[in-house]
Image (cartoon, one colour):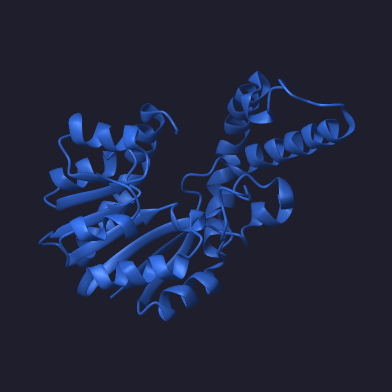
Length: 254
């Protein structure tokens, strides 16, 4: 599980977009369910914005943080095994980087549809398998991480999945989101490639540090951020316009 402080920083960065999307559909607020709510930081912000919130989180430590430190209603488990404890209908459901982990994403979407009131919205984020960085890095792409990620979506396949689950898709777009910048991802992909080559040729390999744990990664990330910052001001908007950023965001209405 990613440390709480990392999620807190990500929530600070990402929550304005999410709260704005919720406000545009329900300026009077309403009832929000987040599936995969982690430590509960987004729910806490939504509650302070006037929403009645409920969360579901698979990791008990993260769920406990939400309950005990933030005073949130957070159920521990999966959406399916916590259905009996939910109190539908909800005005909005948020689920971020969950669907790619599921064996049956269509069932998950159908369950979400059934929990929403007519006119309610689903806000979903997931990796973009047709992104520029995914195409450039291939099997070394950060989010091509089987068996953790089972199903990956393109904009069109995500739209089809939502439509077949009974949703009316309002918008799907790509953005950088929770991903590192593309320059850093290229460096990491090269590192993963060479580590894999060495592990294939070396005997054993137990006890070796993975690329993600290496101190050189931290140095590379800092350098890549400094170099990419001015470049990203031009490149990122272009990639987003073309649907080629690494994260997909969908808003669909029940």
